[in-house]
Amino acid sequence: MSEYQNFINSLKHYQGDPKCPVLQSLEILQGKWTSRIIFYLLKNNHMRFGKLKKSIPTITNTMLTSTLRELEQKGIVSRIQYNEIPPHVEYSLTETGNALLPVFFELGKWGKQYAL
Amino acid sequence: MSEYQNFINSLKHYQGDPKCPVLQSLEILQGKWTSRIIFYLLKNNHMRFGKLKKSIPTITNTMLTSTLRELEQKGIVSRIQYNEIPPHVEYSLTETGNALLPVFFELGKWGKQYAL
Image (cartoon, rainbow over all chains, first blue to last red; front, side):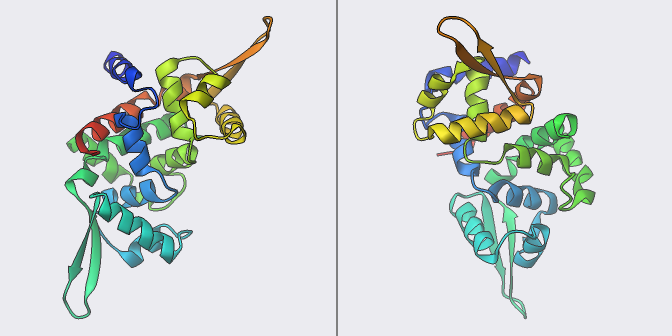
């Protein structure tokens, strides 16, 4: 635990400063659907809108569209348009988005051990 | 990345099943203030209500009270009442709450590298 504890100590001087790296990440990932969408894209690499919608049945089309657009603007998701017939669009994670894998790994470890 | 990738692959069969450990963790941690409060308690070990409120100036008393109560019910935060004069209450993380440290460690690493 000591590497972790040193890390937390190194953040103490930030207090509530929005420049704190943890607060910055939380700010980027906040929103009811953001983390879920990233998680599905981590698991599936490429997904169409319809498949994402099916994975998260309670999300509305509007919310899915706006969350994907936000994630695109933040450089976490990329939207690739395929000009085939019929044309279609696929969503995937950018390098920045894929770099969130260790966060989800730790969330999963914690969930396995503690969530009941 | 292979340990991480194996982990993600091991979760594929869950699809959108709420028993997925990552989805369970996300469900527990969702809410505008939940992760922030946990993060402050990780950094400070023990905090009074007033100090938490001061750390998160935009939170209302009602929201802080209800989020702390929820975290208590979920076994993540413990509330200790000191019957001194004047009496006071301190909040800290339980073992389950402290076990979230690696999640915040990874969030901080990601924030340092990618959040701008």
